[in-house]
Image 1 (cartoon, rainbow, N blue to C red):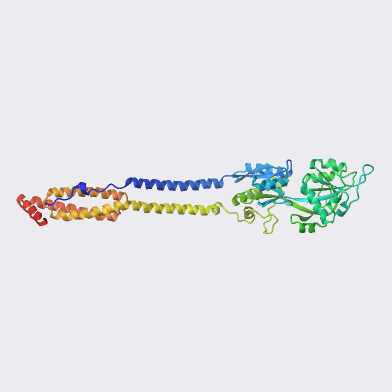
Image 2 (cartoon, helix red, strand yellow):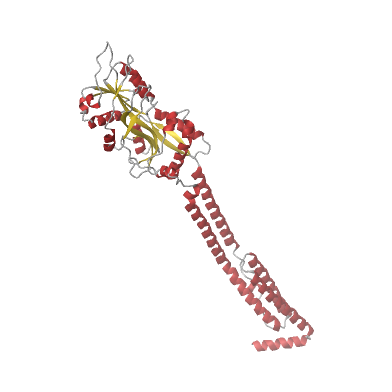
Length: 471
């Protein structure tokens, strides 16, 4: 009688369930991490961004405009951008604040030095230059100078409204254009709130003011210079186009008749120059953020003009390549109608995330298949063992041996079903295994029936004969 291998010798190793669990946990954790990154990215992309905007001086129209805009931005639903004013001493200080990186936006004068990191977002307002000579006083005080042209300002006093040195430099630029030595003109500066008293007390022979065409400061200053029904003489800057040609920050323009507080102020159009106050952003500020700011700025501009007329003066920036101040790409995208949507801005990140998920799934599938390779190899050897037992069963002369092989076949069946549940083998392989198992059980049953029908002495003789043949 031949002794077949016992169940302990052929029992397969249990499948590596812990490795599969670790793989499952890794895949789930990786997927959750990517989904979490996408959700976090979306949150940070759509949450409101607070921008610091430098503006000054205190109590100026520019500061009031910015404060009004900040309040409107902060109260607006679904606002992507909010504003936090950073008060400065004036346009020059605001420009320096932006240059130092202490602000994201700034209100600057176009005729002053523009920071190298500044890019235009919008034109806050246009300013015109007004030069006038008060009418002569009658009967008291010193005799007013007879001045009708800019070239006659040499040897006289010119009062400049406002403390900023920029207006003094502006006056000097005009004088030089007319061949007047600035050193021969005495310049007196006084704050805007003291302009009326200074003019009424005849502190100067002529005056210069720069501001919006309907500036209350300019209109009040001109009104203060009107004495006993006299009409101020407005000095025309006939060389405005030449000045604009030599100084790109300035533009030639005209003061309309009757636009300075009365029908006779001035009586006719007066040639002059203008310059702009700009809203600029620092270079490097997110294109999408600046585009959102520009969109919000122009969406609420009209709604504020009734309460704050200066807001209606806000204009889009010059997007030409030769503009004095280069436009910020975000503002240009809004003006040109090329502003990117959320999907446009983040489609690459979404695509790469999906590719990462796909790659992770493929890697997981490969790794899972790699882990199941041992199970497939074990199952394949078990099928071979089953086929060998099928052959052995057909010639076995011992019912004990047949019972032992049946027990081993039961173990193989159990392990095969576990492999199938784990996905290590497919349905077709399981079907083939079932056919082999059925043939084995039929062979065992037939062999047992044959052995039971044979006399005991014949069985022993057959066993001895087979033993001698295998020796």
